[in-house]
Length: 85
Image 1: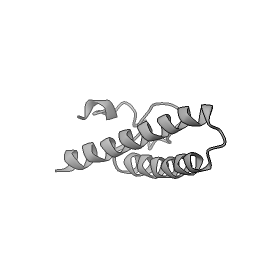
Image 2: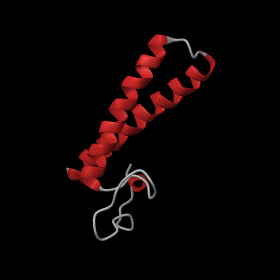
Image 3: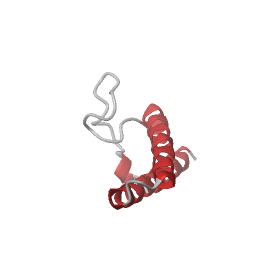
Image 4: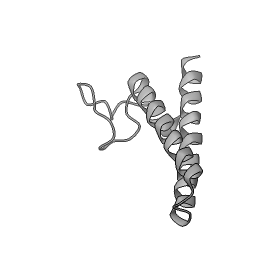
């Protein structure tokens, strides 16, 4: 059950990341599209909250510069985020 929750949260993160990347690319060519920018900002806030939740519950999503680590160094603990599907 717990791994199911972890996988569901990772799937949500992946979906929101996809939307932010797509909107980022769109905004590169349509910088004056206010609705797209509002959507991008909204999804970015959602993504930040989801990543914070994941890292609080399961540990870091990447190994440098995006999350603090508990003691001892937590990045070496497995399973790593990409090991869940």
